[in-house]
Amino acid sequence: MADFLPALTGSFATSAAQNPTVAIMEAAYADAGLHCRYINCEVPADRLSDAVRGAIGMDWLGFNCSIPHKVAILEHLDDLAPSAAIIGAVNTVIITRDGDDVRLTGENTDGQGFVGSLREVRDPSGQHVVILGAGGAARAIAVENALAGARSVTIVNRTVDRGQALADLVETRTPAASRFLPWTPALHIPHGTDVVINATSIGFHPHESDMPDVDVTSLGPGMVVADVVANPPRTRFLAAAAAQGCETLDGLGMLVNQALTNARLWTGRDLSGSVMRSVLEDLFDA
Ligand code: NDP
Image (cartoon, rainbow, N blue to C red; front, side, top):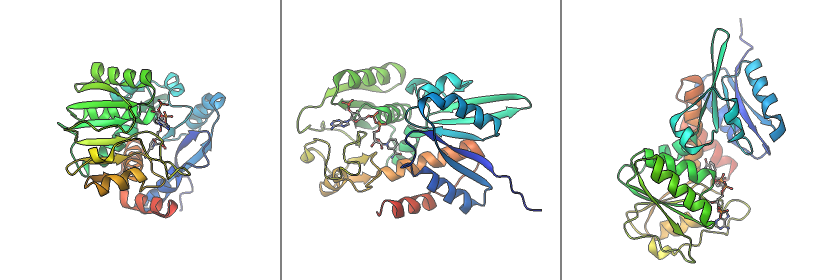
């Protein structure tokens, strides 16, 4: 007899329409022969509680939450993974049941996804890392690189208070040394930097011609230069870094590795990263 009842996962955010995660999750579930669905849901800020109750009521395995829920979700959780507690935000919730006891555990897989992607070309351990930006993505990436053994994490940000606060967080809550560097025009990347990460939204579609204000001649061979911007995958910043002889890492790798981690947390299965990546390449015309 056929089984018409899939296991459910999904995403709560607003606006949800441009989020491609549903496309990669469903393709990878199908590829793995998993009877699972990923439902992309438009959930405004004042309906998060209803959505969480719905997920519990419908026996979901878990869900992602994005803007504006990454901090608001904390009050609904029973447990928080250690790195999510440092970051102070959650993008993945795992729902587990033991009889009538339901527990919601929060993880932050944004930074883990980045580190998973970075590890494909460079182990962060012992590296000097420079991060442009201090928003949600930068925060997760800074903490996870520090917990993965980076020797130093330098935060560069337009808004001083936000940048300094992130540097202070990494310095006090992780083993890595951290400092804030003001974003002066044509920023010179410090000598000895191993990994440079654009964790700002600069260059995101439809502003493909923008790039972070960095002196590209301060980038060079031996450095890994990464971008969190996934659309387009080949940003102007990455093209400039490649022309300087750097190894480059696009934002698709972070998106894919994050989705792989989420699927592992929900289903216990390893899905195909190459299936996910090829879906994204088609979507973004890469
Ligand atoms: P936030 O709004 O939280 O942070 C944005 C950051 O970009 C801030 O540090 C902001 O600086 C900086 N910034 C924006 N515009 C400029 C500018 N013109 N000049 C200098 N700095 C600027 O956004 P998120 O951290 O959530 O997202 C950042 C990017 O990461 C987005 O493009 C998002 O799509 C991408 N992302 C990619 C993921 C992936 O899997 N590939 C996952 C998550 C996010 P300031 O503090 O001064 O305002």
